[in-house]
Image (cartoon, rainbow, N blue to C red; front, side, top):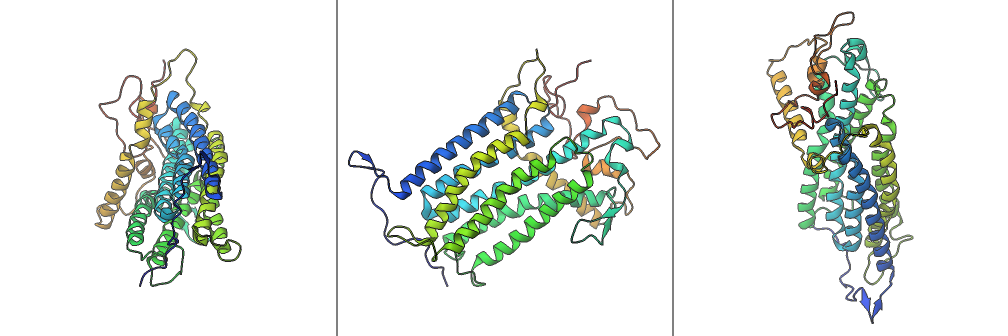
Length: 401
């Protein structure tokens, strides 16, 4: 059993240029608008990324910020191609949504770095180890958890980062199913096609990821004051919400308001309108992200030279830290399931889970630290021998004495 085709049998053979002038039909007008908006989004985001690269004073935070800033141009460029080559729209949409998983994972690691930076006082009062047992967010508010349990913190990180594993897998499977014409993304929505099962897995996976982010925000909102965490989260999540709901609206209008033409089926038109809308919206989201993830708090001090752009760009596309994080979570749970981990971890295990070492019980003293700013990092990162004099062990510029 195979899906009905989304495309017409007849292909438009006319060229963009006709009789010495541009052939301005509806598709080519949309093509020009989508291309112009995508180009403008790339320029705005490139400026914001460049400012972070030239003021790259906190590697741990800014490498994640740059990854998030890539989201509008990635969505805009892919949407432009999905409009231009509308017959292959499904393939482009499956590729596009993968970057949502990368962005959410980068955002979690950024929040963790923000929280870690609040423990500079070397005391439990100024760090997360002071958190007490509390209720989970809705709808599991009748269950309580203790944040200082190491297994809980690893679980929270995995709840978000599992999406960066599952979502690309779903897209790869979806592309294969589309090739063999058994995906049927535009209907009919039937158990006989793969779309139903892939959507169900995706819904569960992203729901768990978002719940983990909400839980972490509720747990650390006092430590995140002044960091615009809500604005940052909205700048990411609104992109996902806009693309999902407007796609739902356009699909609902197929066959009712949206009618097919000689070369475009109702599905082609609905997909094209969705792609065009995304290209336009990404201009505004790129400005929003420029404000929410401002480079000004990392600005180089007058008299200091700006950093090179190449290392920040490499850091942003080098996802080895994701692999290390995921690997450490698998290793922890494997050890825990084999009974090698302590059943009742003490409070300092929060620091082990999040890489924020040096906590002490309330009323006690933290162990001395010779270079706190360079030592604090998200576990399991470690200082490397490749650290340059310009950067600290984790990319921070050395502090002047």
